[in-house]
Image (tube, rainbow, N blue to C red; front, side, top):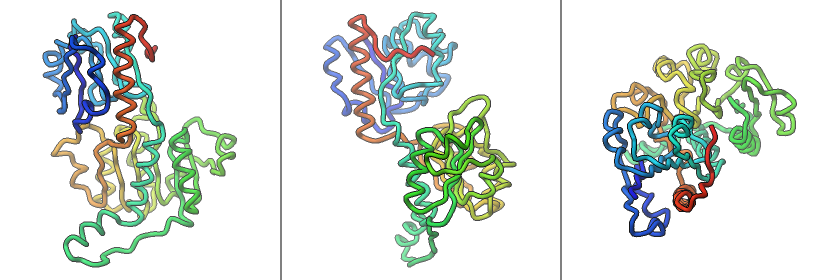
Length: 315
């Protein structure tokens, strides 16, 4: 049995699970680089089992059709919108998920907010260059945190904000004042969210209706001192419109953990935008979470071999 563990950029998968329990007949390849689109059919063709790291490598029907040996597909995390589950089901290929810590992205979102308010990266660079106290940070207390999306992650980030004395407001297409009230959060319109917020933090699921839900119009509503933080999905934001706003100094800055294209190309315009903090999509990455991911992936493979697959995705 050949097993491919994909997109292991940090080369941690081999250390985060006991792959030996799969037996001597199991050959496990840990792929630490991202496989280009045109190489995927040939590179993935030998594998009976593929373990995908979240949505780093998409599995549309067109790719699945070119993998005749594939018998099991495991995705880390509870869901994966980059896998055509129906196409796998048509081939009799179970798609199994893993457990994960659902709050990690909220932790990173808050770290990015703090870094923006306190000029962490600017001060670090300046201090290394011998420049002392080049900037003045901002207080969180008394400023307004706007949450674009108010599910579990948005609620958690809102809790952090209230602990620091921030006013917290929220909007999403189906959000109501009744849902916000128990959290002490004010429900506002989309435009009011962008107009009032000192920092907007995005916590929405990507879909056809939310694609580029933050575009030129929304950025134009923001105050020139306000920040935008995205730890959800890159395509929720019109990246070119954000670049334009940053270059024109129409907003105070941004912090991004996710991008339109990942890994982020070297020639991506956002790399050269001013006042932007870039992070390589690590909102879910921690040793503990990786141990959960790969421990569950191994369990999924063992259960599938025993004829009783677990954590099977239905859609």
